Image (cartoon, rainbow, N blue to C red; front, side):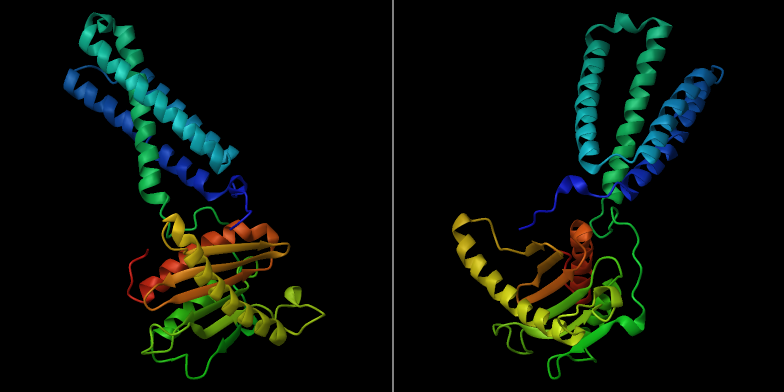
Length: 312
């Protein structure tokens, strides 16, 4: 439930990384020309290699400088793959059915260069989506400023929080996720030990409400913290109600909610089902609703690893 516009994703690291991968493939045309020279007993073709290097280099440079929006590159990727597939199919058909067309050296050079450039670009796209689009990395988010230790408020629940258990690692992961720009409140809820079917209760929370820029005249940081702690329980209750209401749609369980408000957003993530663990988080900056959501997905993965669970 978010009104965040997916087209507003920051135009930052993804295009730079894609440009880097594409630029690194410049070596492939050179290697191919060397192999052709060795296998065909011909001199190294500097012109053909130069054309490939220039085209790939300009494309990489354009990506790095322009940094197009993510939605635009998705469309461009789809168009490229359609054209690349169609071109490869036509090329294969002509080689099979009309091989006489390729007897000309000029035609061979042109078709060979086009095929080489298509292959190199497809290779780069494959590398990008295999490695760079790893959901454990927030590749779109600019770096954040960690909160000074004295400005991080930690609230643990006596009897529920166990410092000598995994609770400590979970708290440290949430504390480390706080930042000046984006994540300003995080709380973890889970059932009491030995009662997996009991309602979830707060184990701990960490927040940045002591920061001067986020203080309110109407309430103290302590009062604000208590309000969010109470609201977290109501959001979790609403999560259970929505799960029952949405079950008639056969879409599976509700795992995440984003309440996009005028000044930031409240987030709910289901960390695990049995026992039922929940994460409540807040950003106070409306400009970072989307990027905070992406960071929370990474945090969810880290918490599940600390609990010995698979990422999803």
